[in-house]
Length: 72
Image 1: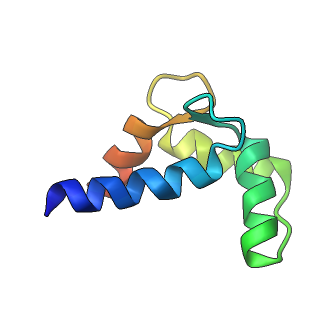
Image 2 (image 1 turned 90 degrees about the horizontal axis):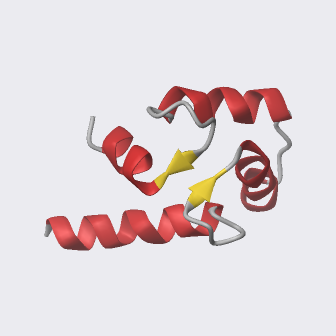
C-alpha cells in the first residue's frame, strides 16, 4: 500500500517538475498552479511555499522533501 501512495506522490511531484531535473523551483510551482487552478500566485508566494518544504537550503524542492512533508 505504501508503494502505491509513494508512486502516486511521485506522479504529482513529476507534474510540478516541468524540466524533469528532479527539483521543483518556485517558477515551476507557480506555472503549474496557474495551469491547474487557473489562478495566479506571485513568485514570492511560490518561493515561500518551496522554502517551507526545503530542508537543504537550495531554495528548491526535491521529491524527498516533498515526500517528507506529505508524511509529516
